[in-house]
Amino acid sequence: MVKNKSSPQRIVSLLPSATELIYCVLLKIDEVDPRGVPHAILVGRSHECDWPEAFTKDVPMLTASQIKFTTSAEVDAQVRAQLATGFGLYSVKLDLLKVLKPDYIVTQSLCKVCSVDYCMVDDLTAGMNPRPLLIDTNPMSVQDVFRDIARIADTIGYSSIGKIVVDELQMRMNAMLSIVASKMKPGVKRRSIGFCEWTDPIFCGGHWTPQLMEMAGASHPLNPTLGGPNHGAKPSRAIPNEEFARSDPDIIIIALCGLDMTMTKEEFKVLYNAPWWKNLRAVRSGQVYLVNGNHMFNRPGPRLVDAFEWLVSMLWNMPEVCPRGFPAELWVPEKGYFT
Image (cartoon, rainbow, N blue to C red; front, side, top):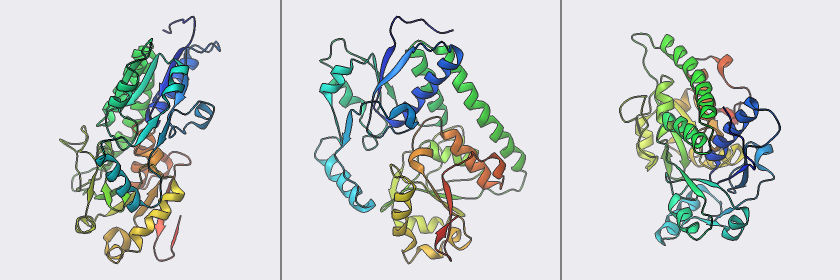
């Protein structure tokens, strides 16, 4: 099942979700063939690759951001201004990359804002000898994420391992889908969710996120899936506050891209201090949740399954299926704190 290698294959990951995918594959290789001989190793990562900590902490960082976080509004302005110059938002330490001599570099062509993109890496590696093989990821749906796992495993020579990882994740998804099917009786109305990936301006959820909500038995009217819950949606987009207010969702989820829970709470103030906010149905009924979206929703990796399990537990009041320690908190507006 596992190839024997005279020396471990050297992998560089330039985006956090890919690092998590690689970790799942390498962990499963060790479980299947626990001889203590590394078959593949992560030798370089992006500055945003921070999970699992034990897997990433001693791995050299190869990227840096040109954007400095201040506030949501100022970051949005910085991003727009930087993109208008024609230059990217990230830099890559090419000299270090050459020293590391990777066999593979995993990157993405999905979003120039989220991380280093494929075209930039393609240009940078053109003069390397030997040139590493680039593995591009561009997921639009949960199924695409699973296909990326299988493709990464297959590319580095462990296709059977990729299948095991995907099958295990799919089993967890199927268990949740069975619960949803049992709950969605005739006449049961889907509750609407307003999912915010940014606060100033508001960016509604896109790609796989609306799909997760629809699969869990809810709806995402601001950006529905393209053909039902087996498909992803259009990319996340900026919307006026008025459009979000008109949608008046039953539930609001604040899961900000690139921000941890502490920073998310700080940026959430932009919304809950706004005059229009307190009139929303979800606010009045106490259905506003903050999630560490940087880890649980915005990275198209294996922990999307954790996010799906949390959605099912939240929507159907089933705390027993919520992953332990899932980073979500309920906003209590009248008391001004989270639970």
